[in-house]
Amino acid sequence: MKNPNKLERALFEARPYVEYWERLQTLVKKLWEEATHEENFLQLLEEELQRADEPFRTDLRIFLQKFEHS
Image (cartoon, rainbow, N blue to C red; front, side, top):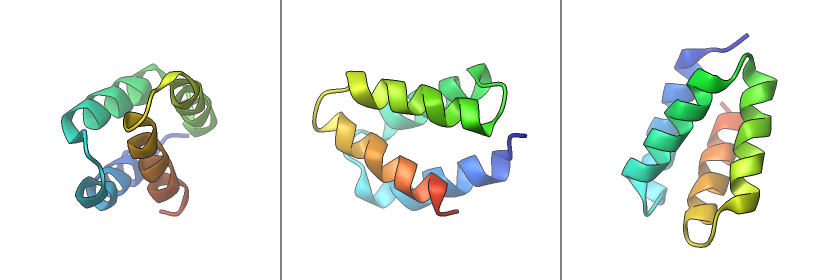
């Protein structure tokens, strides 16, 4: 089950720390729509993390940390 409040809260908490905010927000929302459930979303995010280059990879890690702790 996906909780949209958790996604928005994690985006809000990550915003001050990320360099590429627009890119992160667009990607995360796209993956959220594609995902069938939260675990699938995390899997898709991990796959993007493996493909991403720095410094965007760090932005993804920051978001992931905020998401997992919210």
